Amino acid sequence: MQPAGPVPSHRPTPRRSSPCPLRDRSGGGRRLWRQAGGSGSQVQWTTAERSGWPTGGAATPVVPVLLPLSPTGGSLPTLYPQDMLAVHFDKPGGPENLYLKEVAKPSPGEGEVLLKVVASALNRADLLQRQGGYAPPPGASSILGLEASGRVAELGPGCQGHWKIGDSAMALLPGGGQAQYVTIPEGLLIPIPEGLTLTQAAAIPEAWLTAFQLLYLLGNVQAGDTVLIHAGASGVGTAAIQLARLAGAIPLVTAGSLPKLQMAEKLGAAAGFNYKEEDFCEATLRFTKGAGVNLILDCIGGSYWEKNVNCLALDGRWLLYGLMGGDNVSGPLLSKLLFKRGSLITSLLRSRDKKYKEMLVKAFTEQILPHFSTEGPQRLLPVLDRVYPMTEIQKAHEHMESNKNLGKIVLELPQ
Ligand SMILES: NC(=O)c1ccc[n+]([C@@H]2O[C@H](COP(=O)([O-])OP(=O)(O)OC[C@H]3O[C@@H](n4cnc5c(N)ncnc54)[C@H](OP(=O)(O)O)[C@@H]3O)[C@@H](O)[C@H]2O)c1
Image 1 (cartoon, rainbow, N blue to C red):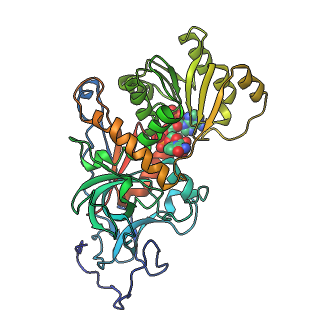
Image 2 (cartoon, rainbow, N blue to C red):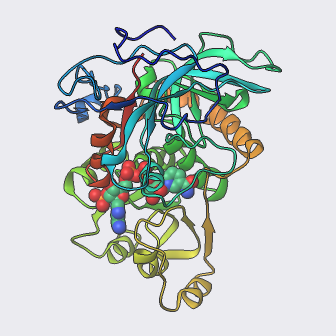
Image 3 (cartoon, protein in one colour):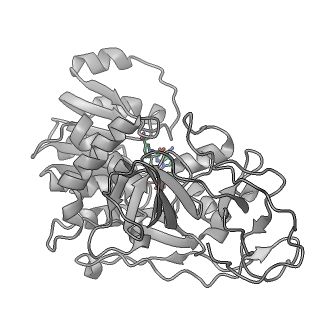
């Protein structure tokens, strides 16, 4: 890449010969600190904007600080052509452990492309990985980041010509998205829907492919189904509401605050329940006149198990894809589920193999992607909460960890 700023005076002189893809040169990389002051830009989302895109606000101008040269100002370092900046942590722990590190740029292997990343987005999995509780699948990059948008910078050997250098694309990743470059099998790239910026597109892959897979592939959602979506204002929740509507189903949500419920309603939820103030099971049974819901999209798990099974309809499908409420179940789950003839289906997308992900990406690209560009009430919207420069990665983690985001938190890479 082009030098991004003045050459720091302490630049090491010895050259490293061959770059080592996806492997940090521990101790060799320079450590960059986040910007002092400033914050991500909040994206306001109003009813008036329902017909348009939630606009990713311009990020606060960033003057990242290169330590230890300058504690108060400076610029991003000049990088060697085979290097890039990536989010890194040396030991598991809190957001304060995160920093930008100079690491080796990956090289595309057989059938892979190199994407120059413009934006990535944050996911709960990043928080868990940072805490030491969610290792990347075997063979995946240890750099955080399950999604990215950017431009094709290089084609590896054996690419089939579906993509050319300079094409814009977004991608679902098993890791590595929070870096200036990432490699990815060409079959996993997704075109950017017309009318979306790369920053907006970065909010799509992980949340929308997860919601699509849960509802359409695993849950077999049908027109007229009632669907209870927990964490309705989360990244996955905001996608699931819209995809349920697209299928002709009736989405209901739970969330922990009025603004979150109001946003869910704007996106198409037929009803929303504040789980902190009322019993969502009773409210759901009231709404469905005692019948219960046909599908539950559940990323909470343990703390919700009994209410979930109690408000599941006969022959209902309960899709468990997260455990934010713990994994402990104590009580007659099996008899209650059997009595409902219910199906408990679990899903983890990150560890799926390449073949499955290619199938998922193809189905999503064909069935769902056009709806991001089609004017009208069914138009799909990636919902962006805040856009942070990557130099503010610590703040982004703190924001998600405190459950403040409505929709996705997007991260912009230094170009
Ligand atoms: N299995 C998969 O393949 C897969 C893929 C993607 C995501 N996920 C999972 O999906 C979930 C949502 O991810 P995301 O990135 O969309 O999340 P997010 O945008 O960060 O939103 C999560 C929200 O969940 C709510 N929440 C947190 N802890 C809770 C608890 N104990 N009880 C009830 N509500 C709670 C909070 O909202 P309130 O203010 O409403 O409480 C929080 O803002 C996560 O569990 C994630 O790990 C799984």
